[in-house]
Length: 94
Image (cartoon, rainbow, N blue to C red):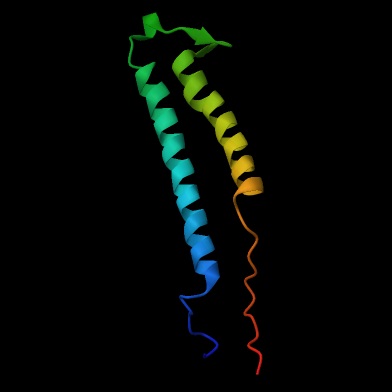
């Protein structure tokens, strides 16, 4: 195989695709969380807002709590589900 050819049977592609899907899943979860709280609780008139630590509840849950949850989820995913993969070309034995 030439140096700049891509071997699509390389097991690193399977790992990369799996990890990309995990990343997409995290993004979708984050968007659903944010949208649900921002537009769910934030759709009421401002006079009816409830507050948490001086922030509107919709903002607190969508942005503050959502950020903390995403940080924890990313740490869990990186430590538990992602695999270290070498980017170096493996030398073929002759």
